[in-house]
Every structure is written in structure tokens, then in C-alpha cells.
Image (cartoon, rainbow, N blue to C red; front, side):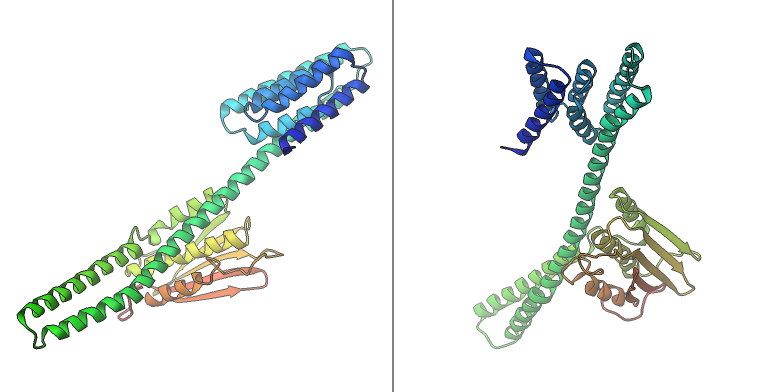
Length: 357
């Protein structure tokens, strides 16, 4: 039996048994059981209508305890718009008023405070619990989307490196060998063929260079894009704080600016993956000749995997170290006993020598 059907059966049996103990029997009990089953069956597609129906059944019968809890939890998970909030609040308020009025008019009824406590336990708490579960699911979904985006960008850079190192080397050899044949003693028809081969090899190398440049530099973010990066992390549920010290100046080297962005990106991704929910501090300390950049987060008490892994395959921090070094800077990792800190030093002026990343 599917889990949903099992839950419906449990709720029907539980509430029917409670109603039977309260003296309900015959066709009234059968009709009540059918109403509970239909309400439970409708809670998936019509959660708020099912919740209002459960409130009505609770007022009529004085029971429906399990039904109230289940429909309230389901409605809390789907509570997203203002209209849903108004409908749920209106139904809950009407239920409370009708319940208190019935208690007041009934001789020897239960204390109104007991009725209010029952409302809170059976309706308000399931609604809040359902809303909390829905928010946690959305938080995890956004975290996964953020990590997946970083993985996609890192994979694109890896492909660019592989293409440059392997295909670029082979095309260069073909071009050199074709050029050597061009200056040799060949018949005119073969010389034309070799010349065409050399031209095609150089054109292929140029096309590869453009493709690799596009993979590396497409929408290349820099230090000015840190606010957007932090905003996206906060939208995903990360508690990120930015601290600045000194007078901010633009980095003259685009490589340093891009490396600064990648340092913060790697630090945020690492914190989201290995210390989810922990506060993250991004610090920018502007010195007269350099920018000191750090990303720190508390380490979890029981980490599931080593912190600082970045992409999880060991390629995150080594590639970042190369990128920072190419801009004339230094990158250090400080995995302390309580705090993981990623620190980078980037010069404010371009380095005179250094390969492009």
C-alpha cells in the first residue's frame, strides 16, 4: 500500500475510533469516516480547502484531532501567497471564535484556556511546522543550485585548460611541420597542398584560441560583482557578512580583480557545502599596495567531509592558487580547529611578468 494511502487509513481509523468512544455510532460514524477519508484525499491538491473542511468537522464532531494535524501540516507546506495566508488565518480565527462560543454556551464545558491550548497544539503548531519544513526544502534547493552553478563554471574552465594543453599543442606541431615542408624542395602541386595544410592548421589554432578565450573569459566577473555574488548566496539562505577596512581602490589588473571574485566564490561555495547554515564573513582589507581578502566560516562539530575541498574533486583550491599566483598574489588556507579561513593577497598594480591564467 502506498505511503499516502497508509496515512489516510491511519487518520480515518484514529479519528473514527475517537468518535466511537465519544458515543458516535451507526450511519453517523460511517458518514464521518467517509468525510475524513475524502478530506485526507483532497489535502494534496486542495490543501487549504481540506484544512477548512477539517476545521468544520472538528467543530461539528468535537474530534478530528489527527485530521487537523495532517491537514494543517500540509497547508503550512503550501502556504506561500498572501491569499493563502488570509484564507488560512480567516478559517483559523472563525474556528477559534466558534469553539469559544460553543464552550461558553455549553453548561459545564471545559475551560476556555484549555480550548485555546488545543487550538494551538492541533492547528497553529502543525501550520508552523509545515511552513518551516517548506522553507528548509527551498533553502536546500537553492544551496544545491548555487553549488551546481559553481561546478558548471569550474568544469568549463577545466575543459578550456584541457583544450589548450592538448589540442593546442598538437595543432602547433602540425603547423610547424607544415611550415618546414613549405620551405623544402617540393613539386608545385605538393607545395600548394602543404601551404593549404599550414593555413588550415594556423586557422584551427586561432579558432581554438578564440574558443578557449570564450570559455575562460565569457562574462568574466570581477571585484565589482562581489555584491551580486553575496546577494545570491544570501538568497540561497547563507548568512554572509562583508567587512571592509581601508580606502577601496580599483584593482588595475583585470586578472587580480577576477581572482578576487573567484576567492570569494570558492570560500562561499566551500562554506555552503561543508558548513551549511554557519555564518560566513568576507573581509576586504585595503593596504597601500595590496588587497588582503579572506573568507571565514566556523567549522561544523561533526564534518561529513574535509573542509576546503571546493568542488569536491580536489581541483578547486589548486586551480584558484594558480589563478591568484598569475595575478602576482598569494593564496593560503588556514583550516583552524574551529574556523576555516581562505586568505588571499592581491597586488593593487599589475605584475610585470606572469602568464595569463
